[in-house]
Amino acid sequence: MNAYMTLYTALVTISKAAAPMIPFMTESIYQNLVCNLDSKAPESIHLCDFPKVKEEWIDKELETQMKQLLDIGVLGRACRNTANIKNRQPIGKMYVKAEGELSDFYKEIIADELNVKEVVFTNDTKEFTTYQFKPQLRTLGRRFGSRLNELKEVLAGLDGNATMDALNASGEVTVTVGGVDEVLATEDLLVETAQMDGYVSEEDHGITVVLDTNLTPELIEEGFVREVISKIQTMRKDAGFEVVDHIRVYEQGNDKIKEMIKANESQIKADVLADEVILDKVEGYTADWKINGEAVTLGVTKVEA
Image (tube, rainbow, N blue to C red):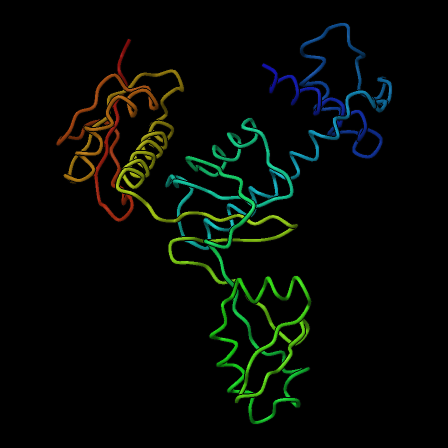
């Protein structure tokens, strides 16, 4: 109810503020949202008072934390895309390095949004990421000349995190090229973030997000179950069933998916409003699916009251 009232208030207030600029659209919104519910309301949005700023409603801390949450969400989705892991596939852990740690309330929102089992804030992501260095030709090309390839090999063999720490501390690092010590400044190097096997990271706005992409058999099975539920929900809609209709679910043609459905039958039935799951048989509205590479035929019928 809080979410509905927040949305309602936002829509009505924004419509009043926008009425002088988009008079007809805001009038339509106002008639639907206000006049249809409140017979005592002004008969037109253009007869309403212009909204006034309510300074007491502004929560700067909430805005700051939600901004951080949104930035983390964007980076988390970018990590998923880089790892090519579908949104419905659960992930075990996500590590976040940020200026401040969010409370459990916000961590739960992040976990739900990104389908992650656990969100862990950390002060150090070195065990998940490292750095690679290449020479900046603009500053080092003429200086090293024929020794440039040898410099590239030296830079490729550096300890990424230790070198980055040195650059952050003093702005320079010393390397040995052909038996000669050479001092390189930050502007002499092209720095790239490299990722450890099994982890994907993204960094922006002072926030680093690392996804643990190692999927256990339990996580993979849960991903299959979520895909099955999604396909059944799509079939409910395509079959023209109402949201409150109870159904029977049918499966045929894939032993792997059959066993997963059998092991997670209670969850599937609860999520799709199914009274019964029938395996090795299809009836009613049917469809062929490829679920994570596994071909299967599913069917749904409505349970008559």
